[in-house]
Structures are given as C-alpha cells and as structure tokens.
Amino acid sequence: MAEVTLDLRGMPKAEAYAELKRHAEAVLEGLSDEIAAMATMSCLLHHAFGHLWTGFYRVVQPGKLLLVGPYQGTLGCLEIAFGRGVCGTAAATRETMVVPDVHAFPGHITCDGRSQSEIVVPVFNPRRELIAVLDIDSEHKATFDEEDRRALEELMGWFSRQR
Ligand code: SME
Image (cartoon, rainbow, N blue to C red; front, top):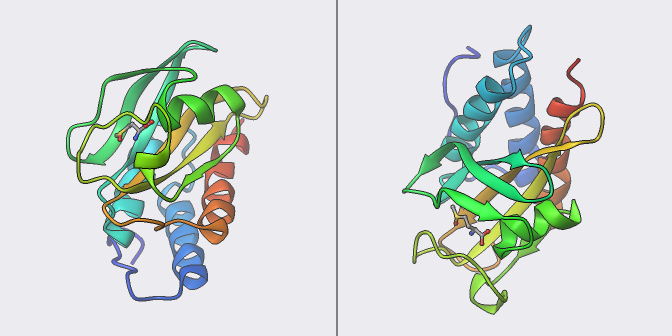
C-alpha cells in the first residue's frame, strides 16, 4: 500500500533506494507541487533510513541564501548563505557533497552536535535552476558513499521532470 511509510534499514542500499523511488513516485503521482514533494520525500527518506536529519533548504535568494524547508529531525538552522557549510557549498558549486567526517569539513555548520557525516544533493527545476538542496545528516561517520550519491541524485530528478 503506497501510503505506508516503510522502514528499509537492513535491506541492501540498491534495493532500498529502488523501493523508495517507486514509493515516492507512487505517492506523488499526479502532483507537481515542489513543497509537497519535499515534505513527502523528507518523510519517506527519514523513516526509511533513520538518519538524524533529513530535509531541504530552499533557494530564497538565488546565488545568495538558503532557507530551511520541509524536514524531519531535530531543529535545523534557519538560514544558510551560499558558500557556507556543506549545504552552502553544494548550493554554490551545484555539486553533490559527500562528507564522511563533518568535523574535518572547514566551515561546517553544527545544528545538532550528534551529526558526524552528511550528504547534500542539489535540486534543480526543469530549467536547470537550483531550487533547493537535500541535506541528510547521520550520527555515524562515513555513512554515505557513491551509491547514495547516485540514488539520491536520481530521486531528486523528480523535480527536474516537472512542468
Ligand atoms: N550540516 C549542514 C547544516 C544544516 S543542518 O545540519 C540541518 C551544513 O553544514 O551545511
């Protein structure tokens, strides 16, 4: 049943992400609202993998400022300037950032002291404009790898396929 939130921990990553993508697309069928999609994806990703923080920072001033968007987890910082921290760096470079140890990342912004590693994926609209970044924080070191990068970039492709 598409409406049930799945816990995919313990499943091989490839299968878990494939299941999550199917699930997200089924839930979002017929919908093109970006914020509803961000809320839905935050919820599905957060409950599927149980990471510390899962959510979006939206571009509110292109090239300048990100503002917290839909998320799940502990209280997130509200504003992040482009170029600051992991999220701001991903926004400024338009590249996914995989950070195995946040303490080794210069300028990392600490919202929750338990965070040890993270992945931040840029989100584009169909015109290739950056509209947000997806940020997932883990309380364990080196949680994310190339497989997460590929799967999450593919999942974020939903936003660039909308009219
Ligand atoms: N870790 C992020 C900040 C956002 S929160 O952790 C929710 C960063 O350095 O960009």
